[in-house]
Image 1 (cartoon, rainbow, N blue to C red):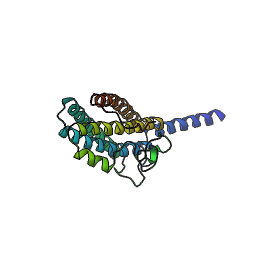
Image 2: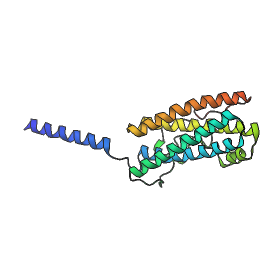
Image 3: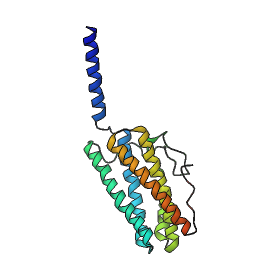
Image 4: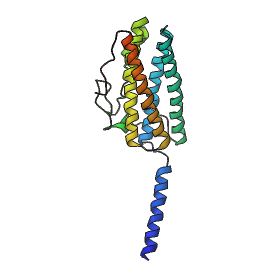
Length: 205
């Protein structure tokens, strides 16, 4: 009798393991929050990259901006596809970054990570206006500074997801974002130095 009971318990445990690994993420899950918030985060990066691509005559900077536009537009489409696949709305009444609360790092005013409603690295409307109005080298420097900070926020969000989820497709994307944007941060820092400028204070410190 005990053997039968143990056998039944083992079967139940296996079933729950399978269900737990295959069940779609819920509306309040880290995966859903990451997909929604990263889609918004990517949208602003693409907006800034279009401004830089159209305003600069530097081939290397224009190529970087083009790569950001293509990569992050494609990734945003994947995030929206996940939400549709999971049967979830693209928007939620839950505050931005609620999924990441307590798993971020300290940041500067307006860019604190891990605080519901405040997305790390995002440019303010005033900063976007300055970027649109700037020209030449001034615009290039401001773009690189804002995009480095923006990428720092994206890396922080990716790292937080990796601590909260082991769902394969989401974790793989998060790692890709961490690796790709970390590499671009180094590239943009070098491009700033070539222009005699420095990054803004890091939000990761």
